[in-house]
Amino acid sequence: MSAQSEGNYAEALQNYYEAMRLEIDPYDRSYILYNIGLIHTSNGEHTKALEYYFRALERNPFLPQAFNNMAVICHYGRILLTYSDRGEQAIRQGDSEISESWFDQAAEYWKQAIALTPGNYIEAQNWLKITGRFE
Image 1 (cartoon, helix red, strand yellow):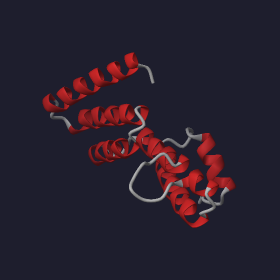
Image 2 (cartoon, helix red, strand yellow):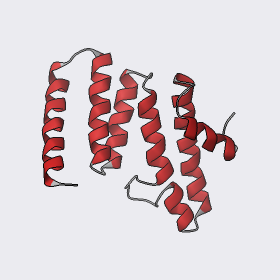
Image 3 (tube, one colour):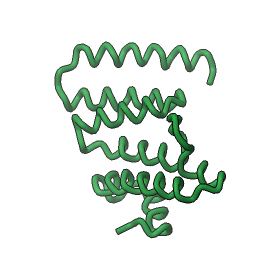
Image 4 (cartoon, helix red, strand yellow):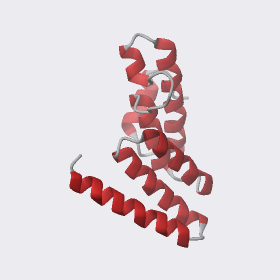
């Protein structure tokens, strides 16, 4: 990531934090929190991103894009927590039990996103069907 991008993200974060200080409507706050999550995702800070997506969904459970982003983080193994790697990373390392649990979590998030917007997330729907996780 370029220094200019980092500067733009830092400035955007400051603006969103200020907006959170001023905004009182939970619905509007949900989108601010979601946007903060996007910035953390772009910065590779996936644990922080998940936190903000969760907080956004607490205020507005009708954000399919937040569920989708959470699913992508789980599916592709980009969560950098203090325990084992996730999803596809776990498969590459030969740990099918861990990969399956993270894929199952991704599936749950995608199911929620699809339930909110049935015509969207076609690739996720196909993945759910192919892996037998679509009900």
